[in-house]
Structures are given as C-alpha cells and as structure tokens.
Amino acid sequence: MTEHLWWYVARSGGIVAWALVTLSVLWGLALSTKAFGRRPRPNWLLDLHRFLGGLALVFTGVHVGALVLDSYTSFGLVQVLVPFTSDYRASAVAWGVVGFYLLVAIEITSLLRARIPKRLWQRVHLASFPLFFLSTLHGLLAGTDASSSILRWAMLLSTSAVVGLTTLRIVQATEAPPPGTPRLPPVPRVPPSARAATSGLHQLRGGGAGPLGEAGAGDPELAHLGHEGGHVRRGHVGLHGL
Image 1 (cartoon, helix red, strand yellow):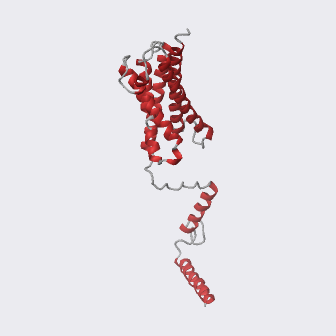
Image 2 (cartoon, rainbow, N blue to C red; image 1 turned 60 degrees about the horizontal axis):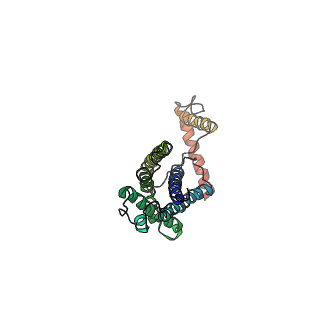
Image 3 (cartoon, one colour; image 1 turned 180 degrees about the vertical axis):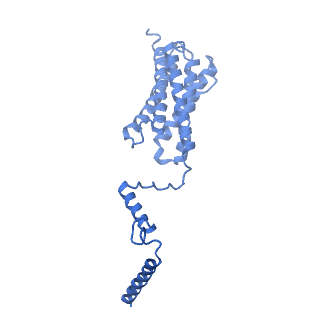
C-alpha cells in the first residue's frame, strides 16, 4: 500500500478532476440555457461555476504531480507536459496533456476577465467543450479504472447531458435576434371596460344609438342642423380667439 501510495493518489486525483470539470461544464450550460429559470440568477450560482473550475485545476495538479512522484510508473516532467512523449499509451496520455493546457488557459482568462476583451474571454471559454471531451477520452483510454462499470456509466450519462444542453444552447442562440436589433415594446392589454367604452363610442359615431344615429342618420334636415351647429361652434371659438 505504501509503495503504491502516489499511484492511488494519481488515480483518485484524476477521477475527481474529471468529475469537477464535468460539473463545471454542466453548471455553466445550465446557467446559459436558463435551466434554473429566467429570473435574475444569484451571484453564488456563478461563483460556484468558477469555484468548480478552479478546484478542477487543483486536482489536475494533484493528478499530474502524483504521477511524477510515483515510482510504479515511468512518468517524468517531459511525459506529463509534452504530448506524445509517453511510452505508456502515448495518444491517450496526449489527450490529457492537451486538456490540461486548455484548463489552464480557461482559468487564467477567467481570472483576468475584467482586464481582457470580452470577445477573447468568450473564445477561450468555448474551449470548455473540447476540454470535457478530451478529459473523458483520456479517462477512458489511459485510466486503469476505465473498466469500472460505475465510471463508464457516469461518463456516458455526463456526456449525454453535455450534448443535450449544448444542443439546447445552440437552438436558443439561432432563435435569438441578432445583436443590435431593436426590440419592439410589448402591446398593452386593453381591459374589458375600456373595450366596452370604445365600442360605445364607435356606435355613437357610426349611427348606432344617437340622435343623429339610429333616428336621424338618414334625415337630411338633422344632418344640415348638425353642420350648421358645427359652423356656429367654430365661429364662436374664432371670435373668442380674436
């Protein structure tokens, strides 16, 4: 047990790092797709997303450091930092090395988010998707625990969830209006009382229920009186204006 301590630390550290990367990606997708609702999200939800990413980097460091310190394997600094230099499953280990650099880039740009252009941060942050898939491939192809049915099912379900939420995010982005498009103001709802009043006004104007409507719509004399009254009223106002 003692002579293989670092080997067990490397294995457990790698599994925990993969789980934290997965949770961070899923949490970020849940926030961007508004899976928690459309209300303004509390700050702690976004802080948790960042915390998971930072903790994943810590356990990745534990995983890499334990591999170097372990005497059971033949990993040195070159093998864990340079892709395709390992004698043990070179391609599978290379995916883990590339994923490590992606994770470092994502975390550094997240810490410098307030000091770098937003577009740069967004592009680097998109590397979270290849990071997840590369780390999953690394765990399946290079890890000695890949034969565990529990780990396989966890990776399968996690991959399905990431693919599903990513598809939903793409659909939402294609349906959204392009940036800079002015939004039309919402049409106000007219209450029933206002509708009834408007309908009554139209009836008065159109001959539904007034002295010049139902009884006098076709009476030319009443219509003539109405026109004369209109002229008198307008003249009356004009005299006051003078």
